[in-house]
Image (cartoon, rainbow, N blue to C red; front, side, top):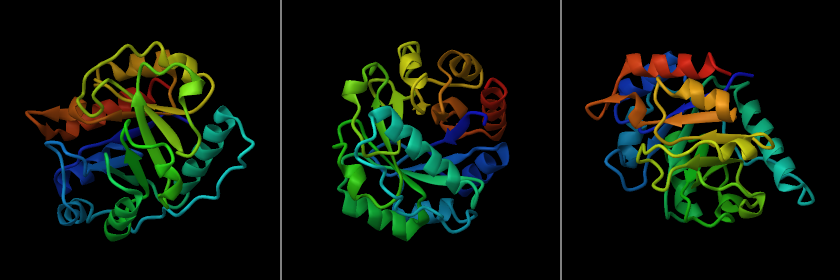
Length: 230
């Protein structure tokens, strides 16, 4: 399977339509404090073209699994969702309790939720859809990773800022478990990132924008560059 692509920070219905047309596997709407922050109502409007969500609480893997085995199992569960839906919807949260995350998920129609680096790992247990956990890209030890989420997203020191970081340390993690890679990715460098790190998925927001707006051609270039390198 080629690398999966998440286009995040959608702000208009046309952004969502263009991302799907470009071949994105995940589209993300931000509810965390950000210039791209959306309300429930604006998110519903942005995602109006998307079919009803497929996400449901996944069967919890056996507790005896190692961290690596846990995330491999979880990634396969997420991949199975694509059998029912071409593009999955991700809601991005930070510092929000699991109950509110699920209220948003049920109202808007989210397949996955993304939580921030400072959010407790255990929050994923109480969120009834698969969870992406953002962590700092400098994380290289499996001891720093806990079981509960479905996917770990490696980003820079300020997740969502579009700032690049040294991807090389992420290679060790990606060699053993599925990871999502973010941080300063563009159509010009995502190919190198995919070849170097070999992540399960890549995540982009500002890297497909021109003057703060999503650009359909940049989205197409990004997806083509990412998938053409895996």
